Image 1 (cartoon, rainbow, N blue to C red):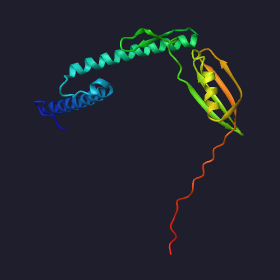
Image 2 (cartoon, helix red, strand yellow):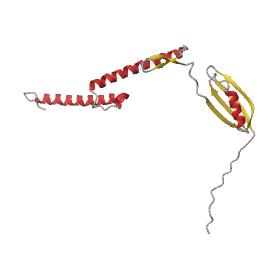
Image 3 (tube, rainbow, N blue to C red):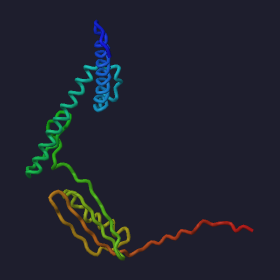
Image 4 (tube, rainbow, N blue to C red):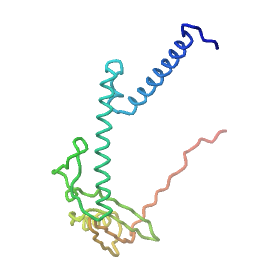
Length: 183
């Protein structure tokens, strides 16, 4: 390409470079806005680009705080330190109303069918001391005879195990659908 004396070719190249730069910046801004959750719900035309950047910066700083808190909690758990506080991630401060001591473990139950019997495994938190007798009552109401039962207490949960012998077996017989004989 030949260059003219007035430098018009150089101006054209600068215009193309600037156009490509603007296109790339628009693409990057779109990607940034798609990563920030609260900006997705708002139309991008109503928010200025500067406020989008400020909102994105605030979101990134909040995520950094959350990562730091989670890293600290992980390090404490690895080192064996006990931290009874849950953190409110809106402000990064410990929430005094909720602690690990007040959180209850959701109960879990597993039923295993054995030869002529049933094994019930129930996991719960230690505060519910009446559950063992209730589970035995439920098993007996279901038509089984409790052969043996026991429980093991761990730090934050109790595992109940009940072995029962099935006394009543219910057999359901389903007839195939009736069809008319065609003559």
